[in-house]
Length: 236
Image 1 (tube, rainbow, N blue to C red):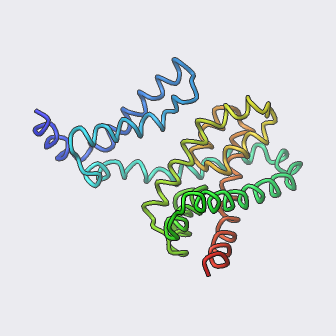
Image 2 (cartoon, rainbow, N blue to C red):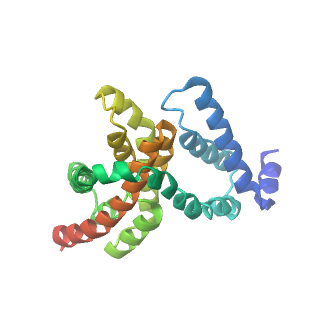
Image 3 (spheres, one colour):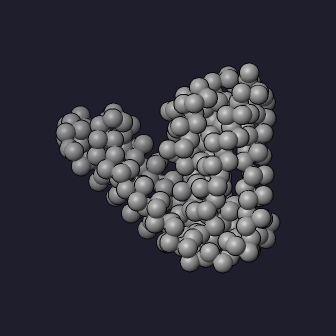
């Protein structure tokens, strides 16, 4: 039964698209019903897709034959984030110094935390280099990882983990530390959790979404500069 179902799914070109959309729809329904931060649709989608691939013994490449078409939509979707940013241009002008300084501090703190964790767990150099770019959007992260000698597959895992973790825990952290300023909330989600964090920021409000989308760009630019310099200095 499982083998026949596996063969059927493997032969379907639309399997990757169908399972991804269905899993996300299910995750969105759960989030709307219970409102728990852990019930993030992207996290639920990831768990469901992995479970289906394991249960039916389907290779990831087969799944990706269909799922890659969803990935093609990532670029135009990211470009659309410029719309809320344009609408909130006055807020950006009023907070430009705070925005740049906070994102710069976040980028430096990210690098130092990765190094600290690496030292604590005695990680190999190549794994450290693979994890350093994890808090920027995937295309930029892959470029940095390739340049400094990291493993791109590990970098992708780090990017996904950072995005999902930030989207899930971000609102909880805001409540614990009573962070209510929409600019701070947007930067807090976008800087470490890139596009996935921005999707959560857009749910919270237009200002949060605009600041989060801005944080994606600024964090990417600063990380491209900071990480290679730090990697060269630290590892020689």
